[in-house]
Length: 73
Image (cartoon, rainbow, N blue to C red; front, side, top):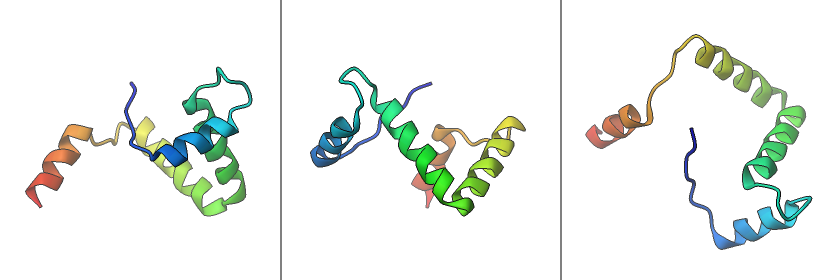
C-alpha cells in the first residue's frame, strides 16, 4: 500500500540532491535516512521495534479510523 505525503519544494530539492542516481525513488532516499536515524538514536530504534511487533500482532488502526477520531475531537 502506498500513501502520499506533502512536502515543501525545498524538501523535494533536498531529497533529489540526496539521490545516488537520478532514477532512485524518494522512498529509497527516505528509507536510507530512517535507517541512519535508527542507527544513531537507540530510543528511536526501540520504539520502531515495538511498533513493528505491534503491527505483526495485528494491533493496528486504519487511516479511516484515525480520521474519524480526529474529526470527532
